[in-house]
Length: 203
Image 1 (cartoon, helix red, strand yellow):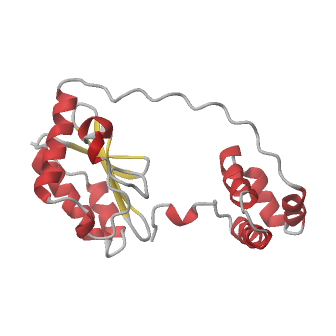
Image 2: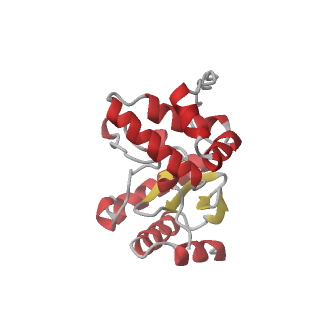
């Protein structure tokens, strides 16, 4: 018989009010579709395993996500969902953003059957190694004026630095570039990554 992980209870309890019913519903659906599921936490987010990783969910400040590990084998290509976030159903802001409970249970059963059969997820092509992005003079000059922002930026891993650099340099208008640069320096001084708004909510 499946048991519930108290860490997931705690995760739901700490989530934003709008997210609680969504997470509780998803948890119920997974157990309904796969009675032998094992709950756990991976990457600080609730996950559900059955003979391997099966699916997971997460709550952010303004939306939730829910995704299947073998998503490509569960959904028909002609029914591919238009997504605006990670996961299989994009940004979930209310229960109305999810398929019916019957459909979700069917997806869970399919995911469990795939794991039961030992079918692996389609292989992913290895991303090409990206060259280090040069820091424009105007970006360097702005960092020099803010010691705290410069220190944070220099201590960030290459991927996090690139996120800021690409955001600023890809601006089409000079005015937009200046605004993004100012915002970047402000966020960096506060120790924030470029996509800090999408990190899991903490209380």
